[in-house]
Amino acid sequence: MRTGRPIVYTSADSVFQVAAHESIVPVRALYRDCQIARDEVLVGPHAVSRVIARPFVGEPGRFVRTERRRDFSVAPPEPTVLDRLREAAVEVLAVGKISDLFAGRGISATVHTHNDLDGLLEAAGALDRGRGGLIFANLVDLDTVYGHRNDPRGYGHDLESIDAALGPILDALRPRDVLMLTADHGNDPTTPGTDHTRETVPLLLAGPRVRPGTDLGVRTTFADVGATVAEALGAAPPRVGRSVLGAAALP
Image (cartoon, rainbow, N blue to C red; front, side, top):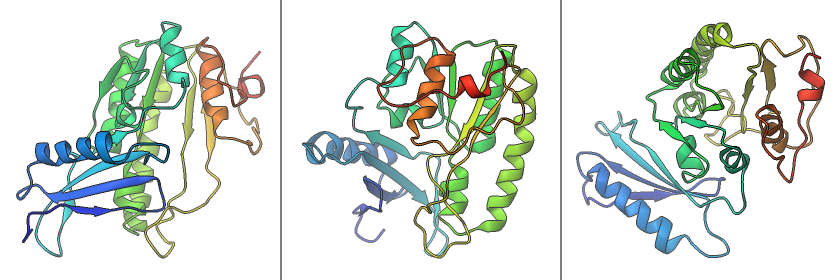
């Protein structure tokens, strides 16, 4: 705040994070700096996966990140399941930061959200409107707001709120719809430090087609999620991954 220079830092992920106070560095200027870093600096054979704009507000000792975070991602190195869905004329609605993560590739429409409950409301609304295809929602608060901040009480409250908000989504599922819940890593708010933690993540399926109580076992790769989405929506299977629909779906 004294110099007007942004704060640049990284973590165990392949990320380059640029933070600035919104009253000192306008958000558009922060985005511009991140785009320059993405296009001109962090390129080549070892390109960093994401450049993350981290605007914040507040006073020393009471800083708070704002909702204007943006991710500037390197383009996927090969076609993703989202690309295959679009090739098959399947609509893909990105809720939250999904479009940023995939550099806009394979996305039909994007809805940016304020928090986890907003993301779930957008997903439920898309279902109510009868939107077909894939509704791909990313909920970040358990990670960024509570997990990294070592706030188990807030983490538990948010988890309960998410659980309650899933009710309308489950109620809105049509006969051939499938709901999948998973995570890309752990973030235990009771573990010392602020890095991600290494729990095995859940993979839960629900819907009229799903056989209740089926044990999907421990999967060998996260790519099984993409393979399952591709099979469920009739797209070409990805190069890696095995669908779980055969084990989970009703005959």
